[in-house]
Image: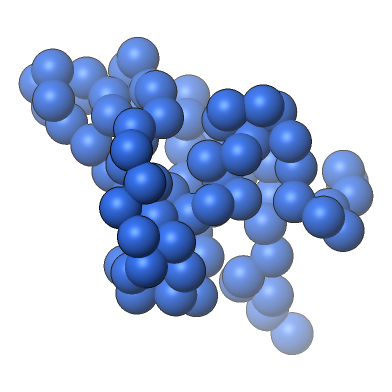
Length: 82
Ligand SMILES: [Zn+2]
C-alpha cells in the first residue's frame, strides 16, 4: 500500500536543497493546500517558506512538521530514520 502521507526527512531535505536560500516564513494558518516540502495533502497549519529560485520574494508552503524540522531540526513524533 502506498503511504503517501508519511513524513520523510530525505524527501524534505531534497525539497529544501532545491530551494535557493530557503528560510522559514510566517505561519499562515489552516489550509488544504498541500505541503511543498514533504508532499502531505492532509489539511493543517501551513507556514511560508521563502526562497530565491524565482526572484527574491518567492515562497512555497510547508506543514508544521516541516516548519519544526527547518527551525530546530526536530523530526515529527514517531518518525524513525530509515
Ligand atoms: Zn511538510
